[in-house]
Length: 440
Image (cartoon, rainbow, N blue to C red; front, side, top):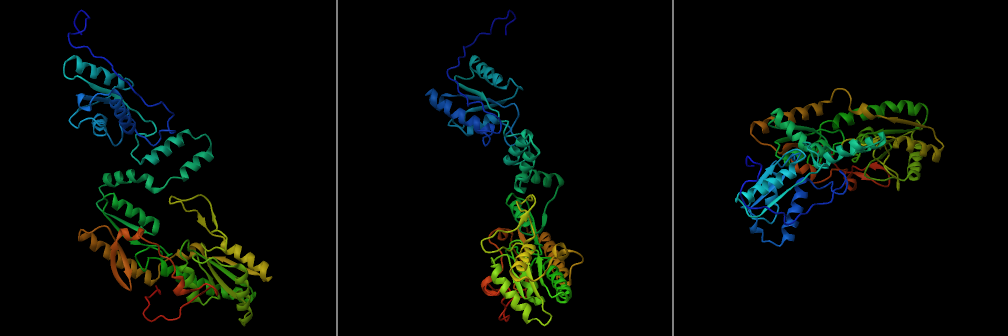
C-alpha cells in the first residue's frame, strides 16, 4: 500500500471462475477422501470448466490449515495430481482459518505485480483424515470413537480395530527405538503381521511358536511337543476316575483351526475316539461308537478327545467373548456340549474335562527345548550374515529357513485323507515308514 492509502500501480486481478466440493459432516460421505484428494478433484474440474488451456496457468497457490501427515506441500501435490503442466509453479500457504483467503490474495499479488497471468488459488481441509500418524482406517475409527455416545458404541469401535490399523505407528516406533532387525516369535497371527512389516521394509526374522503346530511352511512349531506331552499325561490320569465311575470321558484340547493336538494326543494316549477341527461329526454316530468302546472295555468306560474348534454336522464352532486384535473370539465349551449330547443319547454319565492352559503351562519338554535353542541359533546366524525376511523351520526332520512370505501363502491343517478315519473318528496311521517324525 502507498502512504496515502491508494493501491500500488499494477495490473488488476479478477476472479473468472470458482468451484468447491459440498460441505459434509466429518466422518460421513467424504470419509475416505483426504484433503489432497478433495483438492485434486476441484482443481481438475475447475481447469476443465474454465475452458482455458492448462498451459495458460502460470502458478498455483494452495493452502491447508492442518497439514496432512503424509503431504506437507499440498500446492505441489495439486500440480502433480492435476492436468496442469509439471512446470507450473506451486506455492503452499497457511494462515490458520484465513488460509484460503491468503491463497487468493497471494495469487492476486502475483498477477498485479506482473509475475503471472492466470493463477489457480484455493485450499482444502479434511477433518475425517485426522493428522494422526496411523493408517487412515485408524484415524477414521478414532474420529468415530470421539463421536460415540454410548459405551456399547465405543466398545464396538475399539474391538473392530486390527493390528494392520497401527502399522504406521509401529513403523515409527521401530525407527525411533533404533531397532534394526525384528525377531517375530509366535503363531499364524503374529508371524503374518511380521511378514506385513517386512513388506513395509522392516528386516524380520520369524520363529514359529504355537502349540497348535499350524504355521504354514514348517513341520514343527515350538510348544507342540510339550502340549501333546501334557495332554497325554492328563488323559491317562483321567482314566482312573472314568474307569472307577464307569463313565464316558470327554477331554477338550486346544486347537482352533487345526486338530493336530487332538489327533496326535489321542494317537499316543490310545483314546477311543478323537474329534478334530477339520471334520464335522455326527453326535448320534459318535454315541453308537462310544457305547461299543465302553462295552468292550473291561473297566466299562470310554475316552474321547475333542479339539476346541470342532463342530457338529451343520453346527458352528463355539465362540464367546469379545474378538481379539486379530478378530478371533475365545473358543471352548464344545466338549461340554458333546458330553451333554452323549448323556442324552446314551443315558450314561459323563466326565468332562478341559485341559486348556495346562497344556501350555510349566517347563517345556526336551523336544521343545532342543528346537527352540536351535531356532535361536539359526536366527542369530541369519542376523550375523545380514539376512532377513526368513522364517526358521523344520522340514522333513532338517533345520532350514524359508521366506517369511511362505507363512501367508497357505494353510497347515491335518492331512485328513492320510491320517484320519472320518467314519470311525479315529487317527488312521497305517504305515509310518518314510513319514516325518510327526507323521506329516
